[in-house]
Length: 561
Image 1 (tube, rainbow, N blue to C red):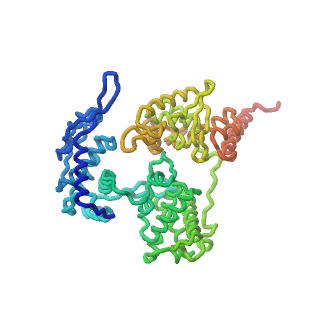
Image 2 (image 1 turned 135 degrees about the vertical axis):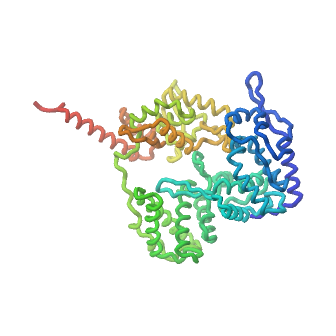
Image 3 (image 1 turned 60 degrees about the vertical axis):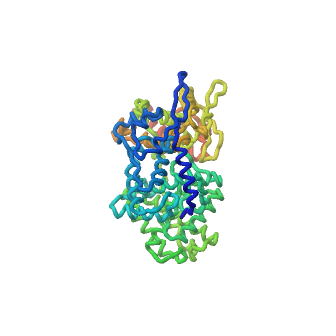
């Protein structure tokens, strides 16, 4: 994408950036404790290509942040040979600092190496440009990656994921800085964005604004990247398929789409390697699918080890590929195989997934709960509140993090929690709670109401680029993982215990049933769509009763004399 911008447009844009950098907001605390922001007219950040940490410390809202970061460097320098490029990058630093998108540590530490490499690349290879907006960003990004690789600089990193999910490869921060600079400047210049559907990387936040595509805001992965499908014609047809299914809103949510792109990218990568000259999959035959199945089994063992759940991985991959091929044949897509999917993938190809035993329902033993509650105050207050809500209501973590700050209901001196249940599509579901949990929620409401919170989330991010959004699930899981390691949480056999957020839901159900609650009440509280889901817990309860009964008999309590 090459942006043709006139010299006058660039000149006016730079004048606007300079004007914005002549003043900045400073926090002022009044005698009564109220906090306001006033503009200070000071062109320090505009005039200087070397910024001092001590200057930033002199701005009230950053003083504590600087004092809490004693090990970071004392100065940062902007060293693009073209002054207007220095201006643009300085503006990005300036804007992200004063809008709380970057911390001081990000500016003075973690972003410095990527910026230094980008500066070297631009100075060596982009002579004559006066703005990053003049770049053909896609072509320049490829040239930048090649330049980094020639210098032996790592451009990709691997994120390992548990089966059945595939490992994910990301660009390192030294690569992504170029796109970040370009995107920030395009936003500042108010350049018209192309329609999201035409891009090779879709952001669900843009799709929601434009087309009402819903997504789970408690999950921080917002994008789908089609660029990894190397065959351009196939990529465009896959994008067309995703667009059609997302707009239909029929059994194809954003989370489902992300699963599909993972599997289909892998499938087309395999086909590309098997048939490098193919421009579509019209010639796909049964023999190719057999080879694909062999590849899937070998791949999961190679990447995850022999203990990996290969049946689950193979089944998921084949079900998605089969559905995709069936649909594009039915819709008449030009890349569709000529051989009917019925003769490509057979029912017996898809492994049968073994059902879990009733003993495998993953709940938290009381032995572990005692350790958790003993050290509970060591958790961040938001994490502590989330865990208590999960433990005392059985809500899924995604539904807890989607709670709004009007979720607490009081009727006849009794408290209820009102939540929307995403999986069952139930709005305003009410769960009875005790006064202890109500107190925790009240204090959380007070905190979330005192900060920037346009969507009124109960658990809201108060700073950084995601300010005003809800806390995500990864944040909660990371805190629990560190908590378990720090306090050496163990089960009764002495093995390290690793918390999973869904365990709290199972634990709630079992405690309710063990406490005498009937099946329909538990089904209603947990918003199970059918009684079968709740019955799995009842089976465990029956097993527990049997064990207790047998133990009593074993002690001779019912011996006949």
